[in-house]
Image (cartoon, rainbow, N blue to C red):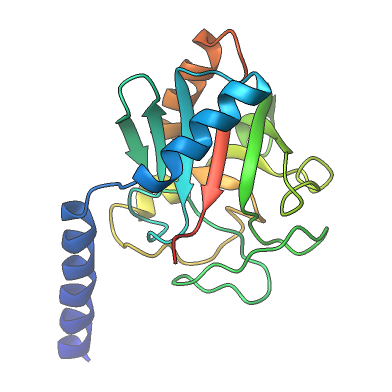
Length: 195
C-alpha cells in the first residue's frame, strides 16, 4: 500500500512538473479575441482566457495584456462537476441544470458578493454555446478548496466548487477584480479547448 501511494505521488509531481514547464500558449486565439474586443466594445487592453485543454489545477486561466500580447498572470480553474465530467476531462453544456462548464465568449458583467462564494462576477454568454450563462448563474468566483488543492494536484477532484462556474483561487480572483475595476470598458472572457 505504501509503495502504491509513493508511486502515485511521483506520477502526480511528474505531471505538475511537466505543466509548470509548459508555458501558457494562446497565439491561435489572440487575433480572434482582439477582433471581438474591438468590434463589440470590450476592453482592448486586457482579456481573460481559459484553456480547458490544460489541467484544472495548473495554469488554466490567464490574464492577458492585449497591448503587449503577454500573459500577466495565471492560475487554476475548476470545471463543472456535471454528468460526463471527470477530474481529467471536462464535458461542456449550455443546458440549464447540467452543472457543466460552457465554451465561448463571455462578457464579465457586474461584481457582487454572496454569503456562499463571496466576491463574484456575473457572466453574459455571447455565443450559442453559452447564451444561457446568466440564467444558469455561471460566475467567476473563488474557492479556498481550489486555492489549496492546486498546490497538491494537477487535476482538481470534482467538488461543489463549480457547477459550471469559472472557479479559481482567491489570489487569482483578486487579480481579475483589479483589472475589471480599473477598466472603463467591459472585459472579455474567452473559454476554449484546443484540439
